Amino acid sequence: MPGDDLATELEELWAAYLPLTLRRIAVIREAASTADVDADGLEAVRIAAHALVGALGLYGMRDAAAVARGVERRVGAGHHDPELLETAAAELEALVRRPVSLTTS
Image 1 (cartoon, rainbow, N blue to C red):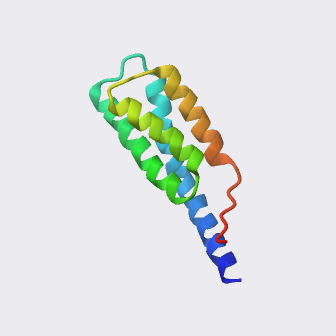
Image 2: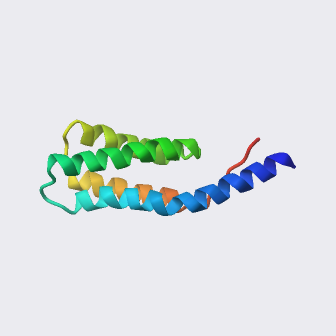
């Protein structure tokens, strides 16, 4: 079926994109492990989270995109909460590592 080919292509694209996704999550995790993150560090986290929101949403990973959106909003407002960032990073990693089943129905 033509839809099966598209689903396969999307799954292959996701597999290729996963390493970049994990690097962006690592930016969030790194900020969680740092007691004092400066404005540039917070901006790097915000940018990583923003990129995750868009990409994860594109792949239909709404739960993961919502977690990333929460990080983007909190950090964008200037909040550095290491516990929240670590929890978000762990949740994001778990969500993006789940087997992906992209359907085109």
